[in-house]
Length: 363
Image (cartoon, rainbow, N blue to C red; front, side):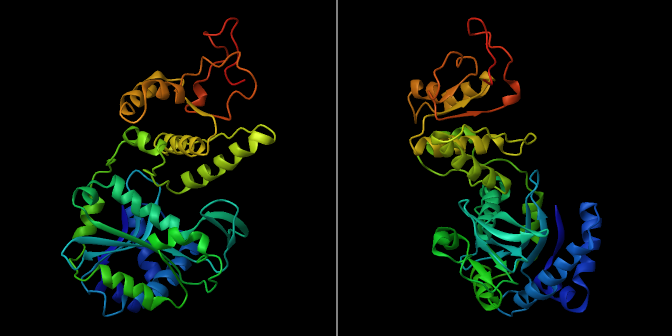
């Protein structure tokens, strides 16, 4: 669902002659069916009425380029702040994703690909804006059928229009992220214009974004198809939103359990929130760091799928070693494994029928 859809010309007109925050409030209520608070209206006033107006009014961006604001990606809670669509120099369809942040201060964080900033009155761990922008681009390329079937070019970036500080956000430790999804700071209007205008040279109205919005949300590659490649060290799935934060907490916690107190991490989420994606990524990372990790599924069906899909990448015995049921761990010596990743842990049994005398599977 898209809250606001228009051409660049219409957006500039709305931002200049009207209160864009009031227009957004009405559109969100009409299209998405819910009301917004005053804080969100003020955020729109600053980010759209000032920051993005100054960018989009440039004559270098085609007047008939498409503009989509507050795009709620179908079946995902993820929200793309601002998107510009059109065609590139070769006539290919293209979209530019602009992740907007109101942040003023940013500090370093111990979590990989994360930073610290003030939200809701306290300093919090958040994903680096480049990573967040990149993950939304990946979401479109992996799950939006129109995008991947028509090879729509997707470029992502972030715009911190209230932030001057370069020291943290643009630090060399984030260089790989920045190379993929650059970050523009306060005063960087022209640089952002240059990026958008280099990718969108011809406008096509709102048709491209409308097709993206109406497209089915279907995975271009199933998780099981990519597991073998992931276990060989290749990143097949870019983790989205909280998936990334959870994953980056699992890895150091697992490592810390090798020398310190044993740790348990419980990941809670409904169907389709990506728990299995996080689990497979964790198995791949921990295995690549030579930790003795296992993926446990009380349900036999996923194991059968993994065995079939991984036949070409791993030997059958290796697959069965990495992916196992929950009934065969009774009587194991302490520290036999470094980490056990349990999918659907609510299915663990109080007593294992496979062990003589039984035993609590969690223990």
